[in-house]
Length: 94
Image 1 (tube, one colour):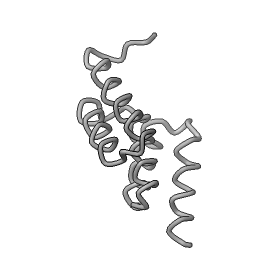
Image 2: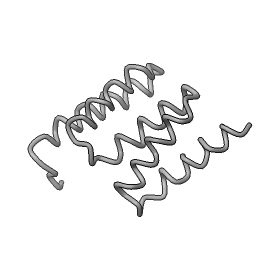
Image 3: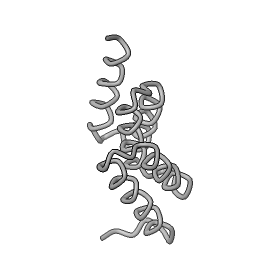
Image 4: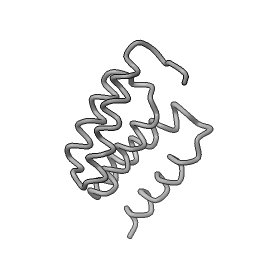
């Protein structure tokens, strides 16, 4: 396991808490957990992708797009946020 800094375990805690909340359908709570993760480490793209997905599920497409765009800036080689952002743009047009 690669350690990304002294706060990384706390970032992962909030990320996984958000992930579980999202899986259970508690999207607002999930977003709060992802917010905490990004407050601690604003360079963790996975938290932005997951928060974007929670916003996508809530049909808050502009917020989803903003999160996916940030994830792309942080990790341009990751194809996942490009695909999700494309879906969010599509949802805006239908």
